[in-house]
Length: 349
Ligand SMILES: *Cc1c(COP(=O)(O)O)cnc(C)c1O
Image (cartoon, rainbow, N blue to C red; front, side, top):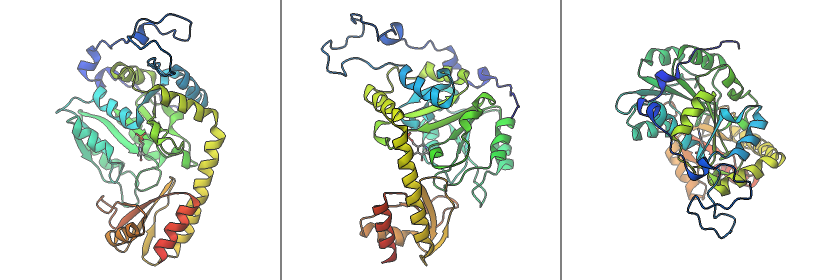
């Protein structure tokens, strides 16, 4: 892909953010905090308990490790308190409240719309096609001068499928705003990541998370990859210490034990096959949607009834019936082998 797109970030950025002088914290002004110094600049408690100092606001150690894996520079990376925070920062950096709009493609992850509402941004909804692929023609028709962001979730939650590469490329090339690809489930898929494409598309933002494959939903860590111009803007509005010390330490530890995570992902893929095989034989299941993620969407005869039956057997699944194109659909996350066998037993009794 050779297309070197001209992307004018000055036209995209919110004027107040463009004018903003970023806040400089104590640790921004004196960064060399590995050195033996007497630190009397941040009003911290001086008595060492391992956490009495503010964390590195730029998370350089952690970002360096992540950059190494992705063969990128740390200037292409921003970390957030979960990918939720990163998505919110995109709104705050680029969308003018009560003026701009964004486009989402339902059925999809609910947060994009919530963030649009919180930030007072019009949320245009362009339904996926019945095969859950992007209706590119309709998306392009909905773009106007006030459209700042298009959110693509691939593999998509709750449908589980990847979006066709050609459709995404078409949007990247034809849309002058920012295309956000949420790759929360990428580690479960064999497909190439879009992270490698940020070199070719200055308007591409890819988000990843430690909440799914890494098994660290509790530490709240999201990763944003983009052209350094976009990262610079996000850094301007970032709260100084948005990723805490415990999270930074835990994430570094996880990256140093990547084999363990790969093994877990492999186990989840095996459990998924067990679940798929078991579900094929269930007569009230009308359709099992192909999945590239750690969950499976199924269409049943009566989602409300089946949801309640499972709940009575102490199994909580997600009822997605109220989403467009998901009538009578339940979403099963892939648990441990034991949990999956219990789910199948409950379904069959
Ligand atoms: C689970 C999930 C996330 C993760 O969000 P975090 O804030 O990083 O925990 C992001 N996007 C999608 C589509 C998800 O399903």
